[in-house]
Image (cartoon, rainbow, N blue to C red; front, side, top):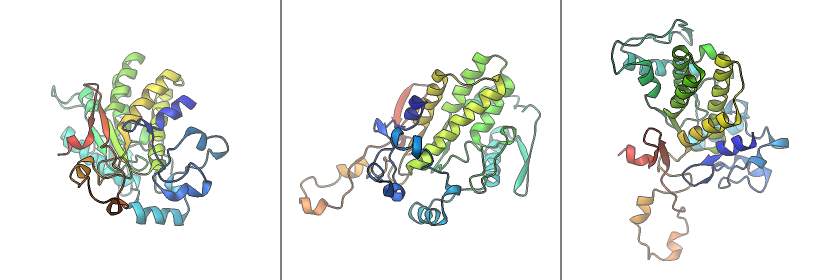
Length: 298
């Protein structure tokens, strides 16, 4: 599992590890400043509980993160309403997966029907791309628990984007090889970015554990190391660390902004400048090529 954790900590843009990108852990000493990489040995063993979900952090820590990074997590019932809206547009009908009822929902347990169209099949639904911006612990993508209340959510009642895709895969595949193929494609179709390294790692772990739970439910077995690493690789590409205001890894200004500056300016005028950081890269799994994320939003 050390290899798997190592894969989950990778930053595919810098080819290093994701960074803490918060000063919350500086009291632990060397290796815990905002600019430091998160290393496996720093968060395992006796320090295995250092990184906690937001709801387990103390009130001061939560308040500071809200003030400094505008970190506010969304109740799962709100995530459900918004994900239902996305599916309403895609399917052309309301309440496909569940029916909301105030701050809860009633799951529809019958097999999901798809529009009578060549473009609206279960496979095209699984392949349809989704992005959660500033994803925190990825509460729009997978919902093993309510990030606000901490309430655990049974697998069959989850409402995340990936939860729904995996339900469709479970309902429409009968062979294990086919299930694995389309489960991989489901993971390849969901994206998200986050600034703070601890939240990003939790998000990545939540996705990996969602794979484990679905595999166990469908095929009554644990994942092999190869399967763990395959899914972890996808997750580390698709959930990446980025400053949403600059499009770069944390701590930098956009590369294009540096290109416009006077390279011969006096050194004393540049003492407060941030180090130039690269624009973030993500993977297009169908073409098997990486690309700069910012190139998709201009």
